[in-house]
Amino acid sequence: MDVVVFEHENPAFEAALDIRERVFVDEQEVPYDREVDGRDPEATHFLGRVDGEPTAVARLREYEETAVKVERVAVVAAKRGEGYGDELMDVVETHASEAGYDRVVLDAQVPVVDFYKRRGYALQDDEPFEDAGIPHRRMAKPV
Image (cartoon, rainbow, N blue to C red; front, side):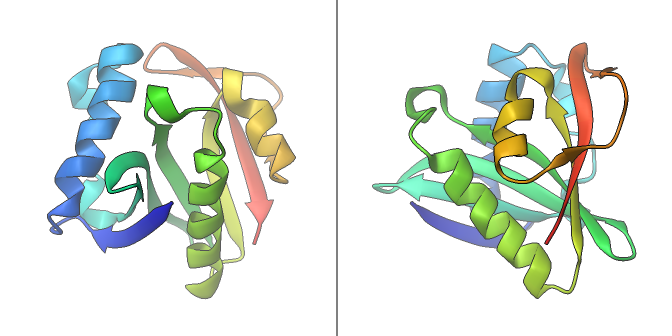
């Protein structure tokens, strides 16, 4: 998978937003105004393509002085389970480390907590919390 890293103004943002809309708004019924939350201009975006087709996305925002928060991680339905989430997260984590951050934080939907645990993330909370009606867990990993 080829991954491009870009800012909000890049034309690739439209393809990234399309995946987010399909996964979060259409599949998971997250309200559009919750998905498009006004924070995209301050984020670094990641778009993975397989054979030229947009396949996976994420965004990264500064969270604390030495940490970043990865958000909006998604893989299109037809490509899930093929390792593209891992490939994308490898790029995100490397980018965070090379940018001088020492920790990545994320809010994982409960069904994918084990995916992040396999990647070395640890739970940061005692109980799930809801975001957009979906149970999540706060997780973090040193990079």
